[in-house]
Image 1 (tube, rainbow, N blue to C red):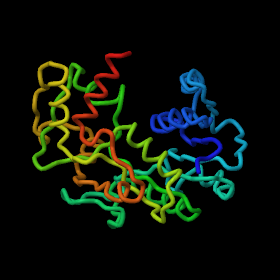
Image 2: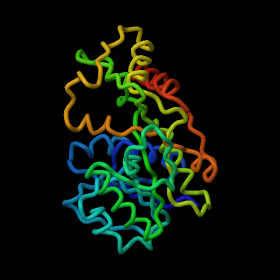
Image 3: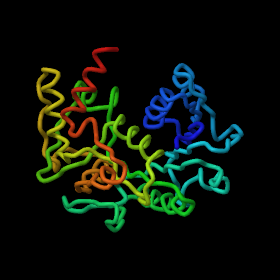
Length: 278
């Protein structure tokens, strides 16, 4: 059964997309933001932003909770503040990252794959997952998220766009709309599964995706640069240090979910169409 309302701790890209789906079902959404500037677009869509930390939050009974606030070394700050009230929630979803699997050398990551996080951020996510799983939440491990306004369509238009080429390197990704649809299904489907990978069907090299974006736009493909010669920042180097293919089989089997955008091709085409309509 759908919750009486959505309470999003971290009213960001994914939470906003889910709130739009729930709004179509007559369900209101409120959630936390960090500034008044972040609150304005949410107010314009009829949602209720709450500046937090800084404001008191009255947690309503029967609400669905969606948590995406970044964890710290002690785990999830939302859990520390509101974990004792978890029993009042109709449903709790925690957005984590496929980074918890670490590097699999191009192998497949399933929900039962041992967690070997390589970064501090992914290690903190493991702590956050454990806290929320302990109170009955469902955990959604997400790869790179893209969608309208946040895709390779924007990146390939940048004057300094480059295609970083690292042979054998692939990444999984997910369109924001597909993530929101999976969360919506998870609110209603009765399943014993608690952890889900949400991603598309085709892991692919980052340079291939950027090439396709250029072709869709009819512009020159960005120059190719070998990974070793790219002079990447330490953060970008860590990103390329992990190579894995993420399986979405459990989400399909347990939730009946099917991605509307099964590969980056359909997803980028939709992003371009959305861009043209604005």
